[in-house]
Amino acid sequence: MNILAIDTSGSACCVALADDSGQVLVDFNLQLGRTHSQQLQPLIEAALKQAGWPATALQAVAVGIGPGSYTGIRIGAATAQGMAVALDIPVLPVSSLAALAAAQAGETCRLICPITDARHRRVYGALWWQDRPVVADFLGDLQRLSEKIRNWLSLQSKDRAALAQRRPDEILLLGSGAAAYASDTALKQDLLSLGLKPQFRTEQTVVRAADLAAEAFRQLRQEGPGCLIDPAALRPHYLSRTSAERQAGLYV
Image (cartoon, rainbow, N blue to C red; front, side, top):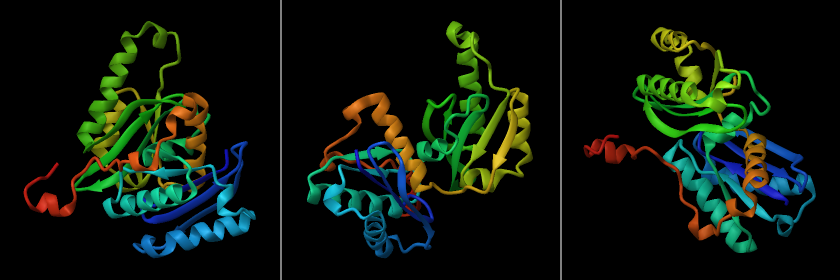
């Protein structure tokens, strides 16, 4: 299945093309500031031109649905919907945190924690273990992050099947949240108290289109065509309220 993968949930405007085998043919990830609405469509056209594909060669559009920038998510979702409707193809929604985790595909020893900075000392986070999500996307402060990890480790200790597997003793945090809180002493101490040596990957702060495409193909392999949806059914994954809603007293 030829897939167009796009993500505008963060500061980068990301576009990739992957063929039937999952091989990424084009991978554009440009830090363009907050100009996604002007840059995304030309970037898609440039990717198609570089791959030598007409738009009609596309069979699905994978799109990062957040969590992340409210405006950025809407731009990506609207573009994916518009193209999918015009080409009469489905869309494949991908969590932007899952796309971050996909950068560590094949990791079997460390607990993977993609986190993006949600400001106000809050993060969007998730947990992955051995290439599968074990804690769904959530929004919370750093203390809640530690609680999510503690709860999962507690469940693991009660699971006989899990006990037969190696327990993680390291955790890799990546994303803009990892860069923002890599020097947070309290977070490090919390993780160490859970028996996890923390490692922070601070050089990758945004989703890369190739990783989003890889996560899309992982979902296709595991779930089949059930992960493909009608464009009209696409829903952004905000988790947080907008700034205007928070100013109105609807802070979450």
